[in-house]
Length: 355
Image (tube, rainbow, N blue to C red; front, side, top):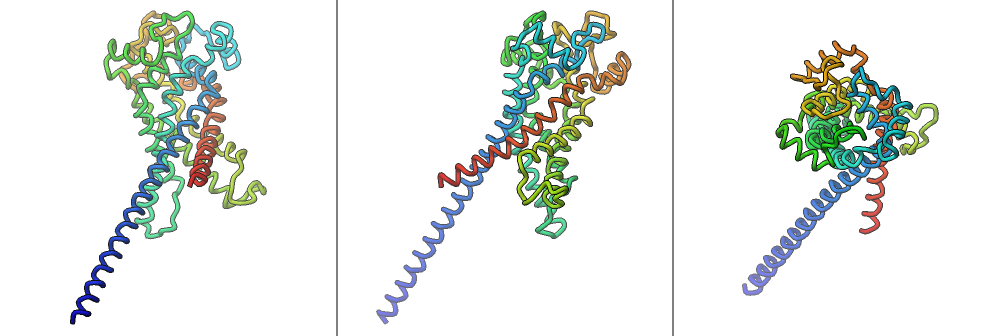
């Protein structure tokens, strides 16, 4: 009887020990899974930030010229085309003039790109999960339409989070050597706008930006991912030998994605920039009401901005700056996508080595 009690006690102790070991392993597994999840998020954020900063700096002169063309007075033309405009900036403001506003743009685009790429990955996972549950097919993949939705969600989240920085960046970019220097930098611009125009002024042009983000960012991601999938599966013209795409091929996919997105959304970008200038009396290149008065043009909203722009300058005004924008968008988007994937790969290799 005593021996049976001892065996029972030993069995109970053994069971408790086994349960404790299993609980310990389970906790370690949870901690490891959480660590890997946090590491993956950090990797996406870093890769997105690097991609955004590098791509924008590479095309900063074209970005500044585009904004100047979008908002300049049509009766006082200073910038007349891409080549002439770049030469004029170089002659009047020097090398630094080509990169004016780029520091603020990078300060904005690094967190913007980080949030955008991270949001896209998370939105894609969520949408794919719901799509697989709805169809009952665990092997289902994202369709171009679903990618468009994920890209649009990512763009709206990222743009809204960093919009005040984009607003002041537009004003800093418009300042020239002959302008009254109201803004000495990003923080001075933010504080000045808040003090003189109120918090709402930091979101001037937000609505056309949101509307424009849907086709722009959405089509960027949808076209880019769909092109990659098509190239891997179809292997047209013998361009793809295995499932891995070369950097050149990725650049081509990014260029095509950028061209489609920016062409569809460009008029909304013009309206956004013009709405951002409203209320800033000392902007040297801001469009005026009838092209002749000294007061800057006032808009009551997005529709009013569209109507007045077309009435005073014609439909073509909605595409002012399209040429330098097209020249810059293709390499900018392409560099951003490739840099993002390359940096993620590098971070992934380093993580595996450190393990």
